[in-house]
Image (cartoon, rainbow, N blue to C red; front, side, top):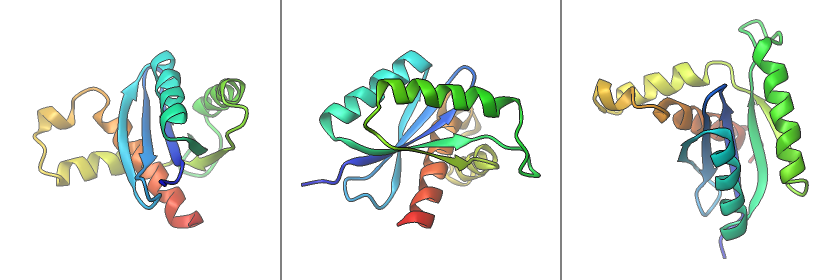
Length: 139
């Protein structure tokens, strides 16, 4: 029996990148990038078919660790997540640098610039980085 998945979200104003753990709960793998409505449906589908043990949401902060304009937006989104998934624990993880690391990782992967720039690829890669950080510090 596989473990329930841990899912991570990289919240953006127009798209949400989603990643989940592999069946053994060791590694992050991209799910995709979606608008908010579709992201909630995707999470519902994962919960129904595989189970979700935790949601890790990227918490935007400035380089100096201070809160910024996106922080409150993400925190409101977390409230919406809690309404839809009240039984799934949530944790916020500082996402500083995750998008930059995603760009660097995608560039190193050998993907063409055009494929790297495809809408959403960076968002789902950033969600993977957020999830992998969580796994490395909590497992």
